[in-house]
Length: 114
Image (tube, rainbow, N blue to C red; front, top):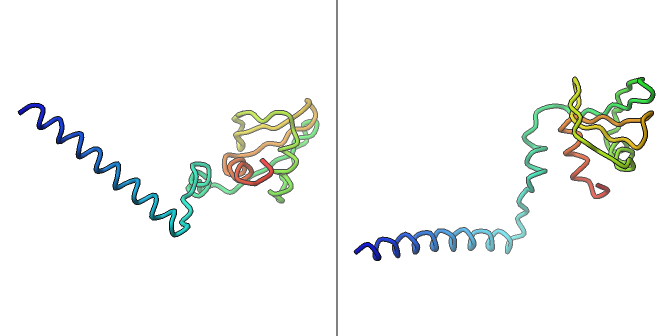
């Protein structure tokens, strides 16, 4: 009797897995695109994207986010660097930094150039 209930649990788990797989295959059949984790994070983030250029301690907000992403991508390193308004810092040397908040960083990561 114990084996019967264990087999029943295995069959229920297998059936749920097969239903989930069938659902994914059906969505794929109709070309439904599911968001990736990065896209979902971007959509749920309520902040406005923010890019700040720091050149020799002169801070200027850059409103063209696509251009900011291109320039930030050219840098050798992007690291988490929590400041007052930003979360990421992209730089090659010490003089020039591109500071991005999470919304801007996730936007840049979803571009083809990243």
